Every structure is written in C-alpha cells, then in structure tokens.
Length: 415
Image (cartoon, rainbow, N blue to C red; front, side):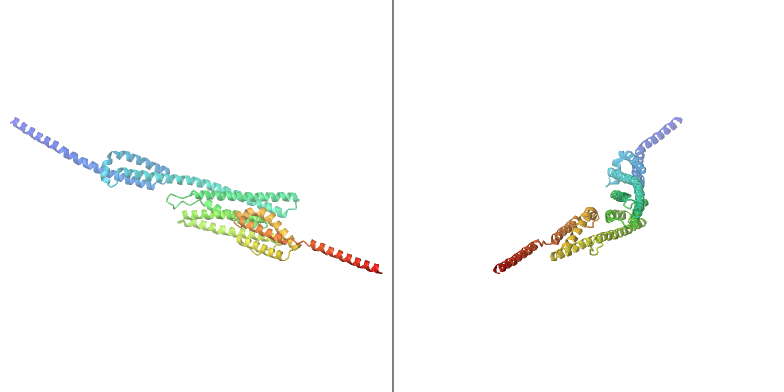
C-alpha cells in the first residue's frame, strides 16, 4: 500500500517538473520582451532629458556636465543600437546621438563666446572709463591754459609757450577721442554683449553713459573756449565728423542688438540727439571763425554755413575778382590779389587743409580748383606796363623841342 502511494507521488512530481521545464522558454520570452521595451523607453526618456538640459544650460560648466552625461548615455546604449534603430525608424541611434552632441557643442561654443564677451566688456568698461577721466583732465587743463592766455600779462616768449602747451593739449584731446572711437568701433564689430539668440545682454550702462558724457564734455569745451583759433575749431570739427561717422555704424549695431530693449534704445536715441547738438555747435563756431578770418583780412565772402556753401562762396568771390581784373587791372587790385593769395597759401592750405579734408568740408580737388582761380586772378590783376607810352611821349617831346630849335635857328640866320 505504501509502495503504490510512493510511485504515484513520484509520477506527480515528474509531471510537475516536465510542466515547469516546458514553461521556462515562454517565461523567458515574456521577460525578454519586457526588457527590450523598457530599454527603448529608457532611451527615449533619457534622450529627451539630455536635450532639455542642453537647451537650459546657462554656463560653460553646466554645458560641460551635460556633454559628459551625453558621452555616458552613448556608452550605455551603444550595444542596443540595432534594437533602438528598429524602434525609432526612420531615425537612427547614430543620428540621434550625433544631433545631441552637435547641439551641445554649439551651445558650448555660444556660452564660451558670451563668457569671453563678458570679460572683454568688463575690460572695455575700464578702458572707456579711463578715457573719460583723461579727457576730463585734458579739458580742465585746456580751460586753465586758455584762461591764462586771455589774462596773460607775461612776456611774448611766455605767451608763445602757453600757446604751444594749448595746442599740444588739443592734439592730445584729438588723439584720445580717436582712440576711444576706435576702441568702441572694434568692440562693436566683435558683437560685444550680443547673446547667442540675438536678443543680447545690455551693453554696460557705463559704456553708453561714457559716450554721452564724452559728447557733453566736448560741447562744454567749445562753450568755455569761444575764442579758439580757426585751426583749433577745424581740428575739433574733423574729430566730431570722425566720431559721428563711427557712431552712425556703432549706433546701428547697438540698435539691432537691443531692438526689444526700450531702455537701451532710449539711451541710443539720447546719444543720437546729443551728437547732433555737438555737430551743430562745432559747425556753427567753425564756419563763423572761417568767415571772421577772411573778413579780418578785408575779404567779405558770401554767407556760408557748411562745406558746400563755403566752396561756393570762395568760387563766387574769385569769379567776381577775375571779372574786375579783366575789366580794370591796377595796383590796388593786384595788392588785393597778393593779400588773398597769401591768406590762402600760408593759412588755409598750410594750417587748415588737412582738417578741411578730414572733416569733409572740402576735397583736395576743390582746393585745387580754388588754386586755379587764384592763379588766373593773379595773371589778370597785374597792372599793365605804361613804360612804352612814356618813352614814346618823351621821344615825341624831344622831336618837338628839336624842331622848334631848328626853326628858330633858321629864322636867326635869315635875319
């Protein structure tokens, strides 16, 4: 009785074992299917997360950490590339990893650019601030020198020394302003302060504020030195013209960068208005000074207030002078020519020409045209020689005297 029971139990155990062995492939297959599905899901999830991290990275360190994570991500799923290729078709594992790496490297490059620009912007702020301090110091020194020159009771030698110092100061101011213009222009060409999406960070208020301060200092300098020489005014005019040319391009760049930033645009517009005021002030003083220089020498030119009208005024004056000389040349007209020629050659061409051209008031061709008119005037203004008529008159007088003497002699002999 015991033996059959034992045999029956053994049969049951055998059947259970066979059933379990038969079921193992099915269980394994089901487990394998769940694993493949989970691999693909995990890949998709981690890929999306890394893509989001690339977009949200704000510093070089942050994006470098994301790049390290991408490299680990690639290593973890490289052995499953065929499985992933089937799951993401028509994309591929390789293209998705390549796109992720490329976007991360682009973001790294942009963030490094911004980091470098921030450093350059900081250096630019310091440099511009230093320019402003130096300019203010030179302006104060020039005002002091000018005041001493006006009130000077010293010897002519000391006065010449003051004038020399004043002109050196003017040259230093010109060079300083040009250096500042060049610095800002180069910075703008490097897209200083522009972010990777074009909206840009705000260029330091110190830089824009210093530009505005620079313009105001120059206007103050003109107001405080109304009796500068024409050459000095022309130097300042040329400097303003150069600044204005650079600012037109620099301002357009800034306006493009900060088109959505109303505060920055207000500052740019304020600088534009101040620059126009500076141009008007230096232009008014410069052309009045030129007119006064000619008038002091006795030449009343037709009214002018810019380069074109100045050139026209000179041409008109010389046309009239040529016409007068052609109709009636005398010593007075010739002396007038000599005086004008001396002013033109020894003052205008010698001391003004470079600034006239740099400031785009006149061109070298226009100066040459004036030269030609002056030469023509000189040829016509020279008095005609009356020596021949005098000699003929004397000869005629001698003949008459001789004839009278001969007649008298004949009359005496007859008597």
